[in-house]
Image (cartoon, rainbow, N blue to C red; front, side, top):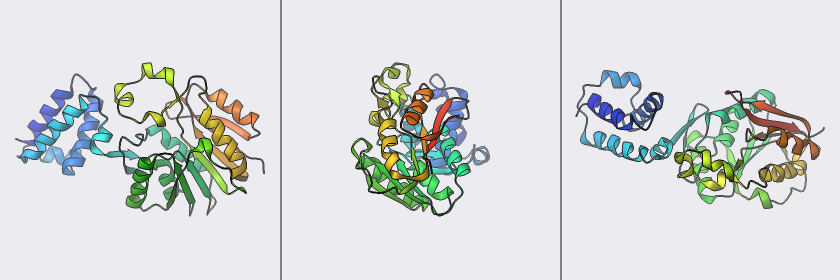
Length: 283
């Protein structure tokens, strides 16, 4: 079977479940994963006869996509901040908007040898991106999930990033004996349980709920715990950065202000949605 026919069958099967733009993006990702082809390569080889396994692989991927499994989990790969990261069902799939958090931290912090802590690292995408972007930063990343930490360690190894990974639960972490970090960053669970009703099956059925959801009656539970830890762990003038639920920017800012943080600000993502909050300790 030619590559042209394989791709035609693949797109036809997905046509009722995905938009044309989504299908194109999926097709490009699968071509790169299976054959190492770019779109140009696919055009150049569209009349080539393909080995049987290529058609079978495309068919198997279509089966899984029609069950709403995310393509990133199917391929075991997600693209984030210019790099490919391993992802598994033990880790969240990195979202494009999270890249804005890396940009903000890089734009605001130009010193060498910064001590950075990433809380709830998942695949390690934030910690690793910061380790490879900031000059000579010393990055530590924690997560409660052993499986997620295993994935994050493998990502750091593949991408040649120096990150120290530790298993810890921020809700019960002991405060440090002295301030030790210049930057603390976190993209913690922040989706209220009641929001599940409006979410897609590809998220609800496949991504780890422990990394997504918080109780309706305590949606800022992780922000409060992290902020309280940061009061003791940040050096004077140190900075705290959060990705947030776009429903709660004012509430998150009020929480940080009430705890004594300075320069508390909310920031928009590339879609003009409230997505980040930053704050600092007084020097």
